[in-house]
Length: 276
Image (cartoon, rainbow, N blue to C red; front, side, top):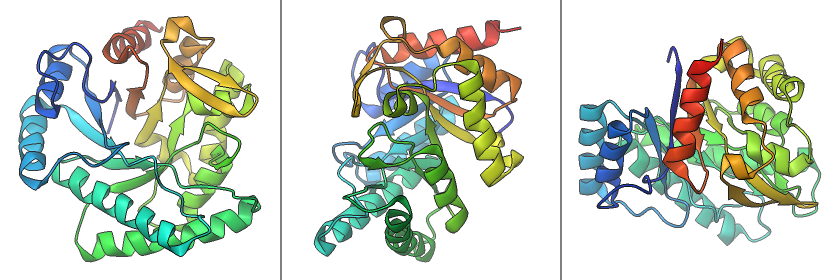
């Protein structure tokens, strides 16, 4: 990928008949570039529907990613819950790949009182099993563990980037809003740049050639993320984030998770291309 693409998290609000196929067409009509399929509650597409989604994605030129169900925890105390997490992630990856999605975003785990390293070791063990099944089934998709929005969740920038060094088939999803909510900082040009510097340090310069980024406004408390907000109703300094992405020549997808999905996605795209 040789440029930055902008799109929505889910079906645009202005889609007249709000289903996935019409949502992709609406993204194209809006002159956005990509869309993230939101499987966050459940994987709502079956194989025949997924194949139609792929056809429409290819005909419109809209690139797709997907987000796995929220109910994942690869550090759960009960083995049964870990097996359910594996099943959810595999199924989401399978259907997303049938849709033609390039990658699937997921939240790896909660610390559950464990150290960062102990959590990482457990997460690696169980995600490796999912990756093996994906390989066995000849499914072509990248799994993207996401920078998390709460201090109780495994998912700092360093943790996510390091996880991607331990397993083949992973690449990070960098959520600027989540990191801001998680820390109360990371909301300036210098801090945004430090995020990319950390990723380069761990994963190399080539990691910036195909990034998956989430960007929106966010409401947060001392424990982290509460809810997403429209960009202009938040304290997110999105212009500085965009400037960093441009200065570092980042390529990939920027998915806007704002409650005003397409409006803020268009704001981000137009603002980015207006930068000197």
